[in-house]
Structure formats: structure tokens, C-alpha cells
Image 1 (cartoon, rainbow, N blue to C red):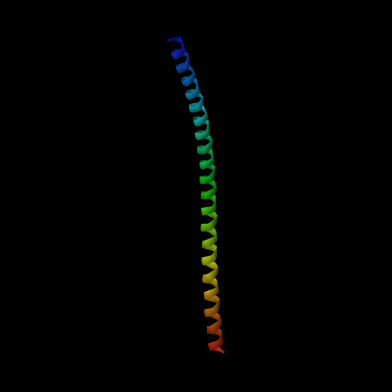
Image 2 (cartoon, rainbow, N blue to C red):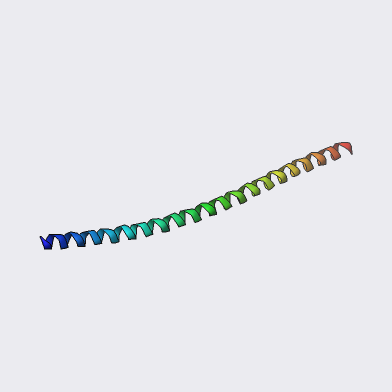
Length: 75
């Protein structure tokens, strides 16, 4: 009977250690995920800004070309 109790206690300790290790790993993964999400959000903001600047530049180019055509016709 004592040997069974001892064996079960060992198993419980082993499982407790496994649970503790798994909890630490989970916390690490959560922190890493949070960091990745922050990085992704930053990249999305930069991409959006770059897209907006690109659209403005395309509009300026179109306007410039139209103005140039208008000047050629007026000449």
C-alpha cells in the first residue's frame, strides 16, 4: 500500500511539473503572439500610409499630365 501511495505521489509530482512547464510555455507563446500582433499592426499602419501617399502622387501625376496636354493645345 505504501509503495502504491509513493508511486502515485511521484506521478502527481511529475504531472505538476509538466503542468508548470506547460503554463510557462503558454505564457511565453502569449507574449510572443502579442508582440507579433503589435508588429503586424505597425506594419499595417505604415502600409496604409504608404498607400495613401502613393494615391496622392498618382493623382498629382494625372493632374500634371492633363495640365500639360491643356498647355499643348493652347499653344
